[in-house]
Amino acid sequence: MSLATLDDTQLYRVTDVMRLLRMSRTVIYEQIRSGRLRSVKQGRARLITAKGIRNYIALLEKEAEEAA
Image 1 (cartoon, rainbow, N blue to C red):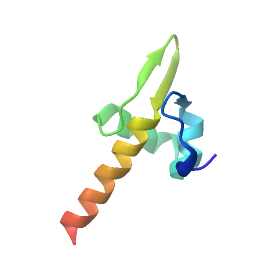
Image 2 (image 1 turned 60 degrees about the vertical axis):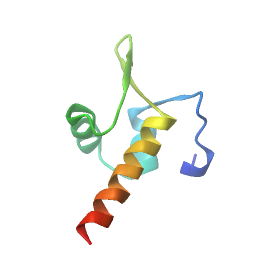
Image 3 (image 1 turned 60 degrees about the horizontal axis):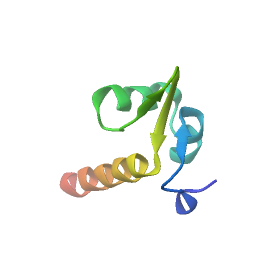
């Protein structure tokens, strides 16, 4: 799975997002708690939409541009 093949109709588990973004579980959950990475809950599972992943990447890019 790669970022280029994100399916807008699919929900991704935290473990999938960890691989896609190359971030630890702790960092992913910190970003979710802070509201920077949007997620939904289905039963006990925490899921992230493709749009949520794209928005998070856009936020990181914006922050990097502003810091430069």
